[in-house]
Length: 274
Image (tube, rainbow, N blue to C red; front, side, top):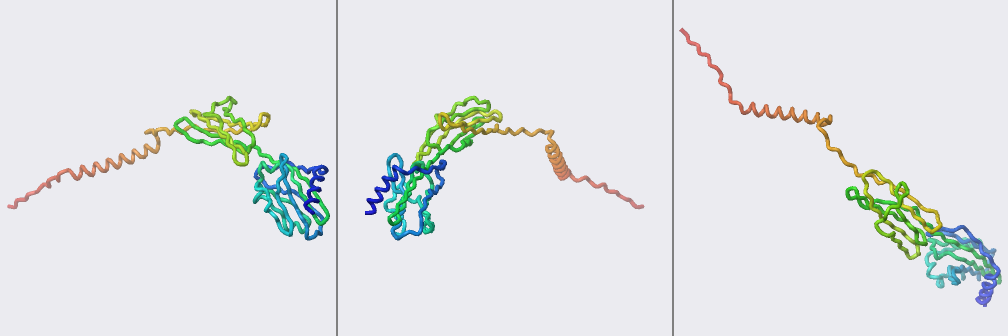
């Protein structure tokens, strides 16, 4: 009997209830959807959270018979919903969604069945997925040829990624930027560039998420290879080293010469007595 009454109330609420809206919440963050009811309540208290998107209804979370009931929970919400059981005792039926996905956007309905009383409130949830600031890193350096890569992720639509020099001139990338989507339909864009670095130069990676969106730009300076100068004989350190080596060499040669010289005869003085 209560199921029929609940169905009637839901149809009525669809026609008469507005939605509470909030600023967009970023993908991956947590969000608590507020819902409350009057206390005290009886043993037949029921709390239901439903999600509506593109004409489809999904069961998000349920509570009845004094405990959470998740057997009918939609698979997309498994392990990502939570009611505060202590809060229920205070009339708080708020639902926390964790690790938000793009598919979590849409309308949520909190339904409270407390004896013969019904309450329904709607909340509109917007989920944003803006691209992150591009990052540039060096992949390889062969002589004066340096290959760099630019990457950015977080968007839901393909983005335009181009390379420019410090004067704003377009640089030709090695290949067309690669766009990869994950299971949550979030995009990652990557592009590679090879430049000849004879002196320190700056390269800029520019990302435009949508045709009219603000450009995300990051510039990085690539340093030229450091060439080590050949040491000169006039270097003070070299002069000292050469002087020490010369003294050591002369001393060694003198010692060898002394050992190789034959002994000199000692004159004998003869004395003749009368």
